[in-house]
Structures are given as structure tokens and as C-alpha cells.
Image (cartoon, rainbow, N blue to C red; front, side, top):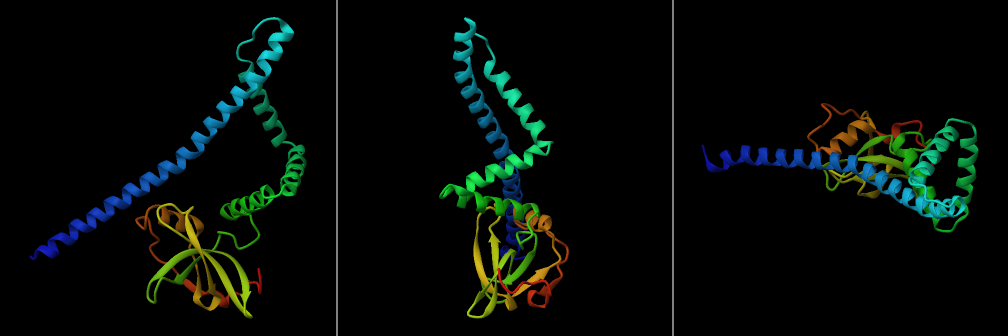
Length: 223
């Protein structure tokens, strides 16, 4: 057996080990980010409320009251939960959305973020990220998996916006504007595609059925 032949299994095991480590790292990062952000936000809110209400109550009552910030924070969280379960939450949410939308720059960023959130959750009525497609990229014979995000007309020809994520972090990637005739719809779910990206292909679908996107009757004529 040649040296090159014996090195192939070792290289394969190394690539698999790197993929597993990358997957574990990405999953751990995605779990820790919201936890850390929550802790930081709660700590900031506690310090802000304690610094604001503590001196006021101390002056009014003539003595220090420990834990004022914590009590106020718990009451705010309770009130938020009550409002969220009532019809008032929707009215407040719409009112806040109108205010944010009226602020220059902030309104644009908020609108984009809202569309992104709706797309990933599947609640958006647009194409969003709920359709997984295949495109022949970066060269013939090599296929890339992406998410259909919309349609537009280019010189009278229908083109598709396709988001191509990078592994193992799908929040980074690039946008490709591709003629619809070169885009293929698949039977993959968003969850299947995300698992493949996060695992660098280790967790992959056993089979993929594709169909030319131009054959789909629901494809709109423009964005």
C-alpha cells in the first residue's frame, strides 16, 4: 500500500474532526450569545433603576432601602408579561413600530431586522428564508445551497435573489442575483439546510429532490 493511500484516511479523519469541532463551537456560540446578552441587559437595567430610584426613595423616606433596583426590575418584567398576554401588547407594539419607523436610519435598520426575523421564523409572507434552493456555483458541476429571498426583473428577465451562507456560521454570506432559469427549488426544509451549514456538511440530507424554479407556478413576476 502506497504512502499516499495510507494518508487519505488520516486526512479524512482530520477533516471530520475539524468539522465536528467547528459544529460544536458554532452551536455553543449561538447558545451563549443570547444568554450573555440577557445577563448584560438585566445587569444594566438593575444598575440603572437602582441608581435612579435608590436616591429618590432614600430622600423621601429618610433611609436607604436595599434592593430597590431588583424589585423595580422584577415588577417591570411582571408588567411586561401581563401586557404581552393581553390585547394591549399589540397596540403598544404597533405604536412603538410607528415611532421607530419615523426615525431616520433607525427606521431603516429596524425594518430590515424585522424582515430578517420574519424570514427566519417563517412568519413572513415573502419568500424569506423558508425556501432552500440550489445554484450551480462557483463553477459548472459544483452546486451551492442557498435561501431564496426574493425576485426582481433585470432587462425584462426574471431573476432571483439567493442568499448563500458560509459554514459553519450562516449569519455571514453573500447575495447572488441569478436568472431564475438557473435556480433549482428543493424539497429541503430550512432546518435541514441550517443543520448542514452549522455542521459543515457532516449532518446532511440523505437525498435531495430538485426542480427548476421557473416551473413553479407561484413564482411572482417581480419582488
